[in-house]
Image (cartoon, rainbow, N blue to C red; front, top):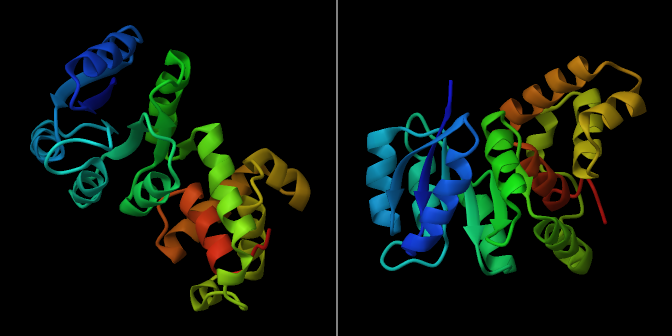
Length: 218
């Protein structure tokens, strides 16, 4: 089955470029386009895509607001924020609104295609510069972190807390498995339970929570 995608950008040429890239894959199908956030919500509700590629700065309803509204749909598609502006405000606002990825528009075609496939599989993706900013946010502002773990962590077992720490430190499933001397399948099971217990969407949100609640420190 093909991956269904909706393109949202106020520039027709940008949408055309993305469509040409995705149409060449064979397993990704562009099922709709929109030039602003309001139209994006309507097109998404009508076409029910798997992924929405979302611009940020648009007339009327902006991309961040549209992302939150789209993620409230049922079923909710994944959203990848695509922007020209590598700004912290967009990164955090987009992730908090429910986006599963944050990429710059100068991302290579292969990386864009890979990102679409990755978020459909349930993972998250961010541009390298965005990842560095995400980490730097916590490194540069340790004083705002709470002195003790968030009360939500009480629902986790001791092993799940260990796994959450390793996720927040940026380890892959294979690296976590090696560190804890368990199988990758066991790690995946732990991660699924962690996300379910904490009401998190993906690993990016787990990383953010790990730092915000004080479980992991820079």
